[in-house]
Image 1 (cartoon, rainbow, N blue to C red):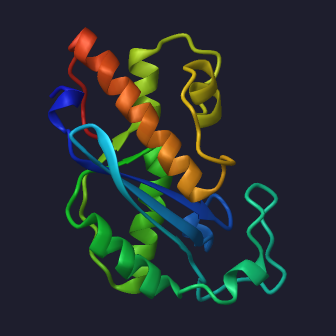
Image 2 (cartoon, rainbow, N blue to C red):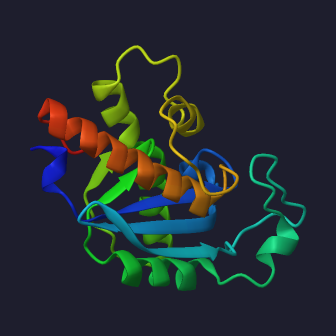
Length: 183
């Protein structure tokens, strides 16, 4: 399958309390960016108040803290809104294994069904751009001169940057016409 064959998808990104959902880390921010015909057409964003959050939580990476979370929708409400936004769309994430693991954990925790397929821009970048010094989202957007919207390591800025990277990779894919696999 060629990347250009999926002109409609949704890019997602989560900010979390840590790296390991199986050890109790939770999502504290959600963003989703809809792509149709290789254009960004809509977005969704929500801070998320997890059921189990430490009273003195503060992320050094994204500056989300307990006061940010106080008035946020609870996990069930936020993920229900995300489900309505993405429907059955194919999902895309940078390092999709990370986001897919958190999505599965939150879905199970909230008794919601997310059976969406995933594409991974990290894997696509490694395939189409071999020998890059770094494949982090910030490094790739910098190396490829992709304009980012705001501070990375916030869900909406990262989702927008990933969407722009995906669109850039699609243009490269059209030139190379190489197949790739679902994550």
